[in-house]
Image (tube, rainbow, N blue to C red):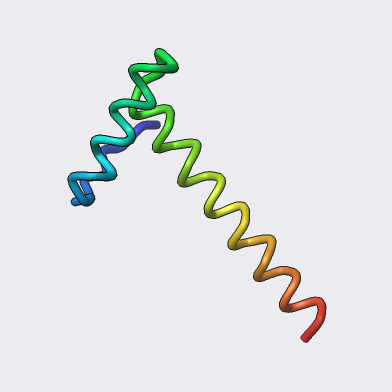
Amino acid sequence: MIVRLNVDVPMKLKRRIKIYCAQEDVDIKEVVILAIEGFLDEMEKDSLHSRVQG
């Protein structure tokens, strides 16, 4: 299931994403999904690491 997520981002960030997507011929949606997944994977890994050491 796909749902809509609306967020406000700085204009410079939007410009960077658009340029990257145009150069790499990928959709903004793909880049945003991968970025969020990567961020959450790192945060979850760090959280697990903290619990193991705690």
